[in-house]
Image 1 (tube, rainbow, N blue to C red):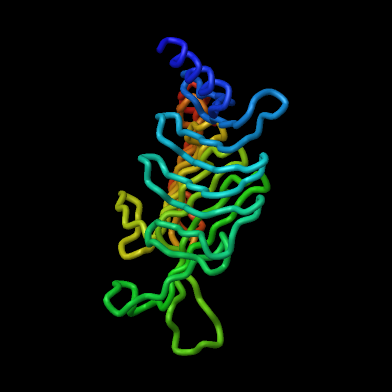
Image 2 (cartoon, one colour; image 1 turned 180 degrees about the horizontal axis):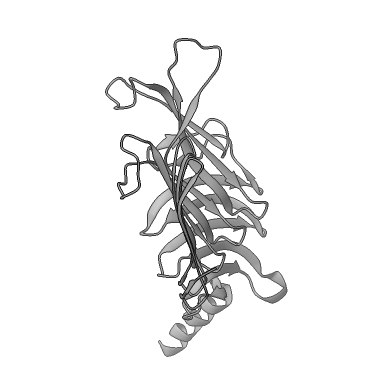
Length: 260
């Protein structure tokens, strides 16, 4: 019996799938793990998983002969599925791609444009006919942009007019989050203008620290901005309304207010 168990264990080691941690976060938790079949010279990449710094799964990609082949999944933090699709020999298939935020939409145009026609019971039906999600990728296969917009209804069809809506994401080629922009913000501050539409952007350094937090009106006439050093201290803060600067404050890297 002992000999039989030993043989089974040896077979599992020799022929089973192996995994290698390629990169880690600063605290040592895995950031990227590669999965391989075979050993040594015959080792072949069959899958890649990436993770957020909190341990949540970020992406899962299947490979065949070291080329993307099979299912691809991409998640937001909190294990929220954002993108699903398939590759064949390194190329995205035409009709297998689906996005999930804020609506589940299947694409008929590969992995870059997703469209959904508004139904009569949708809150946007009275002002828009279609909802679109545009998806872009870096050359290395990492997502670069994800964002939605609506096609507004107009009396004339001579010119199409679109409006950004919801959350938009941008990523660095390294996979790190570059910025998040939220459209249709109704945030009220001491300096916001009533009944004005705003969008809010938070930008990040490639190393993950917050760099800029900005609130801007759709007509670009009103801006509130805070900029930060990598250590988290505020570097710049200003508010502009039209051509008037309400205030502008600058700080040194230790957080001390700089005076002219």
